[in-house]
Image (cartoon, rainbow, N blue to C red):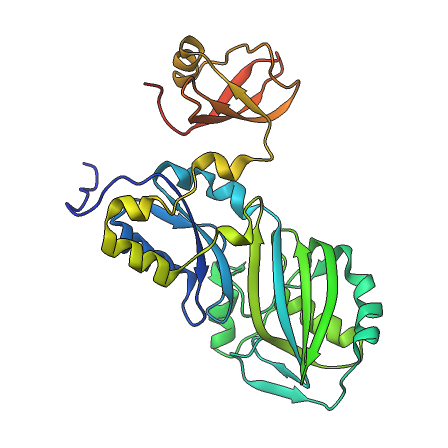
Length: 306
């Protein structure tokens, strides 16, 4: 028997680009937004630490099927690198375990940063959600434990050194999924012969989404007071997550057969790769790919055609 939906819930379909406030976990932010929307189904795409602020895409309804692709998307961050100490967590929430008085100038950091652009190896921090023998690393760390962690490859596409204010140097970086900014800050400081941790962190963008499209929590709360229509006006359509995907549009007949799981032939389809499939009403119908026979094959249905 299926799980009964609570009577206050409603079907919502779209993406909210939430500007997550500091001090709130990603899950708590998600649950607050879900209650405001009275949404039957919702999920976020890529956690931010409570210390961090910025873009947290919240997907509602069928849009939760896009979460995997957004998790894989590139990210852009601005970070305040605080000199003079190393902490247990690599950020301002941890306890200081080592200190020194070395304060490299911006030119020194910029030279060191050149070595971190491109594909690099990172060792995940102990305070992370990586699994080790069935447990999260942060669970082991909170008990005072530490285990050996294999390194993993990530890509830093750009790393720019900004202004210095007091003991904090501002950095801007664009990186691949799986990048630990805390680890990058610690490693960059080590390359300069210094110690540093993340004093503050802001995620400016995720994949195709622009910074300007974000909404603060109080914006969402204000919209909730006006009703469902005002809330839904804050949402982006599912197709907004797929602007870098090749697209094909089907007529009603092909949309019908594709909805049954059948591959269809489309004259203007790309020769290979993944595609966003739109129905005759220009709504996102499915995520698919071009199969070995050059047919458009569905891989994940977003909705059924009318």
